[in-house]
Image 1 (cartoon, helix red, strand yellow):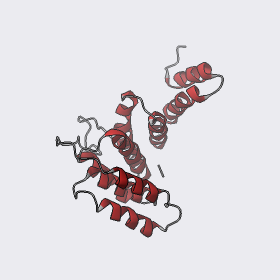
Image 2 (cartoon, helix red, strand yellow):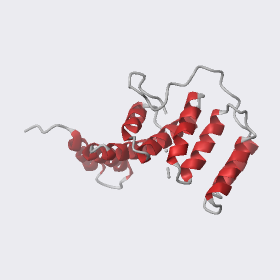
Image 3 (cartoon, one colour):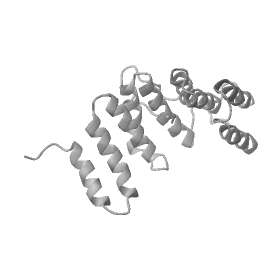
Image 4 (cartoon, one colour):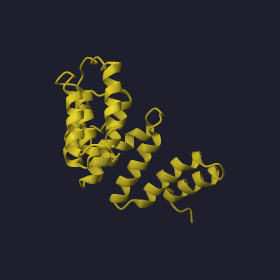
Length: 190
């Protein structure tokens, strides 16, 4: 993370709902493998070289590719340019990014929005993800949402999310930690 659906009633949302369009053909397995290999070189190359490598791969995709916009956003984000990543993540989502990449884009967009001083938009994007179908990114959703909440002065809510995400991974004290997380945000009964 260095970071997908928006509440349509929210003012000035970070990303409008994706436009209805036919599902594009996914990139080839070869393209996916070459892209994965490029990402292993992130720490070997300087920023410009790495982004150029990703740009060359993206150039093989159709010009309106949601995946292309997403990969370019990730490259900017991973090289410390959240401000340049945000519009590309938004573009990818608007173009109908699907599957696990859609959720990754939501998480990464929210993180980038937080980095550029717009954590409230990250909260609006990530809150619906708490109720999304469970996958391997659930904890990343909670961690990123916790960071956005902390930036808004809502640290107790953020801590509750992180403890709730951590509790199932503990070898012991799972029940206690889950209860402590819940009590952080429940109103006092006194």
